Amino acid sequence: MRVVKNIVSTKRTVVCTIHQPSIDIFEAFNEIILMKRGGQIIYSGELGQNSCNLIEYFEGIPGVSKIKENYNPATWMLEVTNPSVEAELGVDFAHLYKESHLYQDKDQDLFNIMGSVYVFTISIGASNLLSILPIVTSQRTIMYRERFAGMYPSKAHSLAQVIIEIPYIFLEATLFLIISYPAVNLYESAYKVSWYFYDIFCTLLNYKYMGMAIASLSSTYQMASICGSFCITMVNLFSGFLIPQPMLPKWWVWFYWIIPTSWTLRGLITSQYGDINREIIAFGKRKTITAFLKSHYGFNHEDLLLTAILLLAYPIFFASIFTYFTAKLNFQRR
Image (cartoon, rainbow, N blue to C red; front, side, top):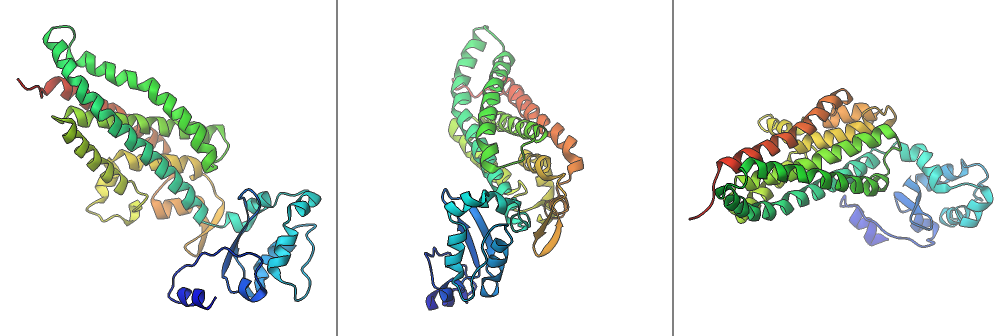
């Protein structure tokens, strides 16, 4: 423990697993995460002086026996949270923790949810963009041949490629919703589920059409791949998650407003939490979730309609670019 304390004194965080420690070792830790069988958290927070915070929390649960004088808090904690005690009391400690102020006051849970949604969206969006590049560039040769033979115009080929993606994206968005929504543990509301699906559907469609637009402007697949990777990097950097909009330099904030990913994140988070007035402790200050999102990220629930319009406008914009430049540009080598 002396080594651990020396590391902590350098302002580093140490994470340890402990198994039935003595009182001295147990109370040497600042915070503890207690999980029951199955990995569900039943306590997460500071121990306090002489484990007072931990003891106060569990003794506040009706039916839990009080700790004896000079008794090891670690041993008592394991005894009162034993599955047999939980069954005897008829309670679910994991559910009680989620309903407690310890859980609801944490801004970290909001950051975790935002991070999960952000990573899910960026990863599957980037996959959609990059996967369409070789298909569009390879089919362009067929389009040139059929156009030269007078079978159909370039716009007919482009529109067919645009339209055929819609049912596939719809299915992909549905599967994404079924998997990610309960995994992130978002609100069980038809209104919020509908908004989540709409945001994801428009976003996946946007990434797909963005990739098609990039391919229509590139002479080769290699060039399209380089441009696509660059675009993914830029929309990732300026999406508003890694660097929130209020913290962006003035000479770069314009880029935040024109990229589609920033509106995706704004729509996903605002539709889920923009109308929640529950208070949390964020950066040492108590404020509502609505106020925190507005001050830290610049998200406003009143902008939800504008966000919905722009989320639909971006796919239309990129599909139009793809259709126009496929007809106008000819990269065929003779």
